[in-house]
Image (cartoon, rainbow, N blue to C red):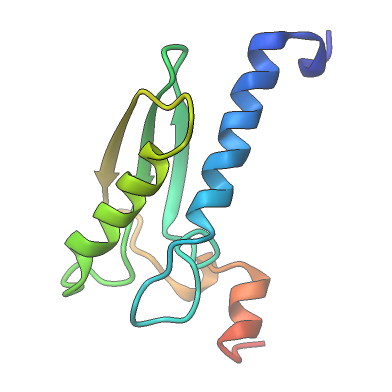
Length: 112
């Protein structure tokens, strides 16, 4: 059975897609690339009850804007219709590297 044939799965995929769309509007203030394309988002998990757990990192553990970026991500995802709760897990293992960036982000920063 295809996921399109399962209404719950379709809603789940739509919510995940919407989360990624929102994440692509949130930028690290020091780098002109969104947090998703920078590779800062390691995992997006949507539970059956529509609570969302995001596992993310920062470009450096001592980032002075850490609280600001995490708050923007949390508030952005919370603004999505249907999301009940958002939990952000900030991790530094594996450590972020430029290899985690999308090709689009690397082009934007002149790394390709």
